[in-house]
Length: 389
Image 1 (cartoon, one colour):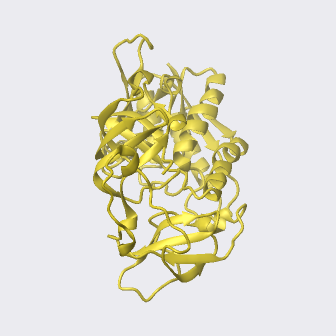
Image 2: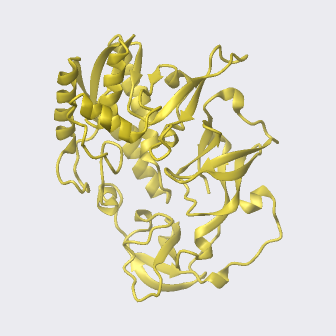
Image 3: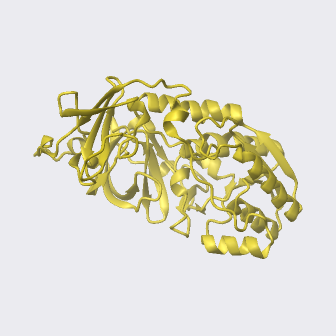
């Protein structure tokens, strides 16, 4: 099979290319450049140049063709502009999930197919399974967690479609990370000891306020502290009630300081508040970008940080295998996570005409609008959706 590997300059994609070559496939390397601007980045240089140089060395070592493609314009339109828009709304987006859906497995995939390949491969720690034929698909693809649970990246792939998965391979998904590094070292690949990348996909680590000030202006507003006594108890235990967020205004607490823009902060954040002299750290528990207010609470156990459930609007629901989707009125038990690396949490999903309501068995810290909730049945990622509240 003719396969294009998204060679990133990291060890995982390098070993993906190595394994496919050993399996007898006709492998081509494609390196994507998706970002030029270093404004707000913490590495202070164009890291992609080093990544490209290393990727070329890997391709040369494996004796495979190397292609360079610049997708920076479409990346800005589909990922970075989306980030700015979401932060402006007071939501916290997940650009890595968007990058996979809109860039790696859409624009990049189409570019690779135009070169005459039959499929693309990446170094993601995930697996693709084939399910029994159904009325909808002859052989629907399931998305499975990577064997190495410490590196499992299925969450970042939670928005992929059947069309995308059907033309994708994850060659290292069945391996543990130490084994990947061992294979790279034994093959003499220059990425064997390279550290894993961190930060936003293709952008890297950033100083968020500096990065966002490219389009979002700083504006002074009040920091309002909410006392634990603010929270009462409710006898209503419907899914809608259990998922309802806390509501605050300027009179819900007392002003303890000022900030430079509510849209620069996210729920659960404790750094950058500039308010000291406390026995425990202050944490952001909510933002109001309309009135430019920042609400905080003291301590990890502050009740404002914890909630029982969340809501995903019906329009934002996505199912990996459409035949698994829940009809209105259905109720199912799934293991669910609301952020990468979070241990899976037991939850009940209630499908209503307007939305999905996810109620967890245990209270969850830092449920954040704009992030993705993803639910699993065993190893299989069933579906996902953008958290509305």
